[in-house]
Length: 134
Image 1 (cartoon, helix red, strand yellow):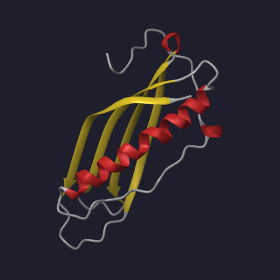
Image 2: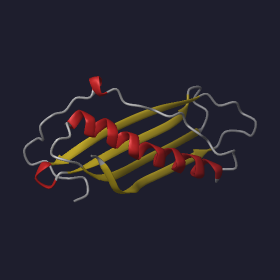
Image 3: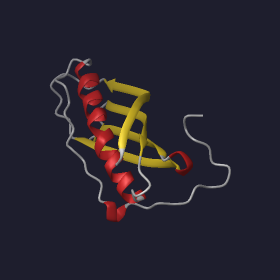
Image 4: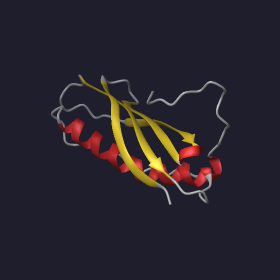
């Protein structure tokens, strides 16, 4: 069973210099990686989300956040990857909603995203690789 233990936002940047009334065509760029500490049955999910305007209007939100999860011996890494994302992403959606409301626009609600475990690639750690929390 994959369980979210906690998360933190390492970086949150917002730019909203678009003129009032400008129709934005927002697009999302998302990157999600998981670093495993098998000896402790713990992993760290690292999410980077960027929301920007397709027409290059001066509007952008960037979030970099990390979350810690525990998992069981029987959990497969592709399942850990997708299930940890499913637990973590709603918090990121809420942060986007709250942060965008501070810019004078209605709170932005980004669509729910799901990962397809068939497209997840699990690689062995590179030698000398450190946790992002160190």
